[in-house]
Image (cartoon, rainbow, N blue to C red; front, side, top):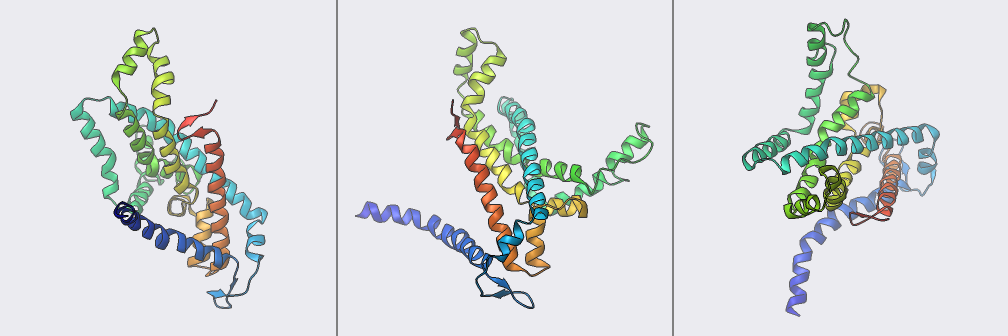
Length: 281
């Protein structure tokens, strides 16, 4: 009996957090999505499917697919850039490893909004990149680097790369060097050892990194709003606009639920080909 009460006592804080900060807000969004917008904004408690029929308009579906494409690109590119970086950090000398980890974590000490605005200084026509290229005569006129999809992808990659590196680094840290040595003793070269030993053993970190990057990027609205301008509107911008500007909470809630469905479908497809980090044959 005491053991059962002790277990419930340990579970209570996490359960309380999930109930009041996840389940209840999500339940409210579900309820709002079937209501109507009031005459001057707010909620009119009349059941309707209209919000969902509006949300499946081809115009919004184009934005959904654009958001999905940018999220997938960001996730794949973060993996391609993050794995080598995590590998280098994990096998670096202890002193260098600590320095690199500090450099990786330092950006989190600065507000995400400020870090995103800093990219305007870098990417604008008179920014660091264009000024340097013009100074060395590489280009004759400034490149269009800001307020487009390229700028959004750069901002996404910068903002979410650490979320890919850290879980992969944690998996690489758990590798036992004798396993790698045994592989090479049995005749495998470094490349075969990497793909047949290192990568499979670090799949839990890869899976965690993919989830940590894909889920927030598909609903990202700060980076597209600041670096994409009006030319790159993602689903996160639509939802934000409905809640803060148009004051159409029911329609914004319906768009949110469709976005949640997109995320769940994407994750289910991903986990269909994996089993707790171990890919099925």
